[in-house]
Image 1 (cartoon, rainbow, N blue to C red):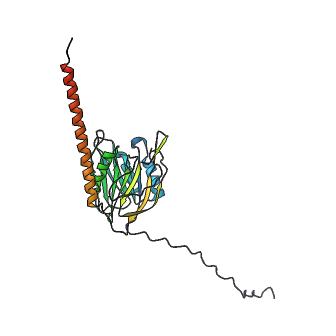
Image 2 (cartoon, rainbow, N blue to C red; image 1 turned 120 degrees about the vertical axis):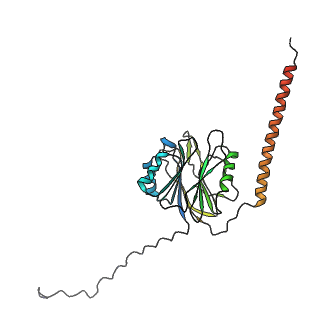
Image 3 (cartoon, rainbow, N blue to C red; image 1 turned 60 degrees about the vertical axis):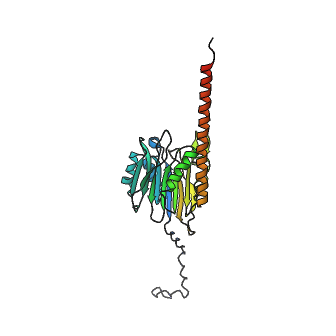
Length: 279
């Protein structure tokens, strides 16, 4: 073949290599939300910068905060979205919620039965298909459960209750399941790991519950992926509610009777002391 002759075409051109097949992402279930809850530890804990980093990394549909101070409102200036703060009465901190999309209605602030030290409230947030309560409950199982029952009255059929429960034992609310991560979320005095941060749900399914690094706070954030359950919602049976009410009344009456006995005994001792002969 002369140098000026054009090269012969290759009779067997290489076969075209097909592009790698990338599986399509599964569609998000209707009403599904990625929710994060974090106790920030007031002024000495998590900062706005830490919250910005958390949002950029995790991309939650809803971020719930406890012990949030007034300066956390700057989060909205940094990342946009929608923000609501509910301070506790006579405290520098309270509950806060952030969402990248608007809520159907402003979060509702519900006063709760409170102890001697701190008056408590909760935020109830309407997400359309279901509702969420952002909570920071009191210590003590009796008061804790009273607060949960009050919260339940303000929730729709499908609902979640997330936040700092301040509770070591089981969180009991008829009709709700504890679906939060089972790992400890708080380290008391760096010695005792405690699971204080919970997620109770009714009429919802949960997947991928996890805890995240705690940063400057004394609590670790919890993250859950929640969606409406296909099964119909089953509220607590009326008989169970009646039994719970009867038990509660029995506890109250027993306490009143014990107090009356103590009062009578104290009066008898005082009368005996006054009647004793004086030398």
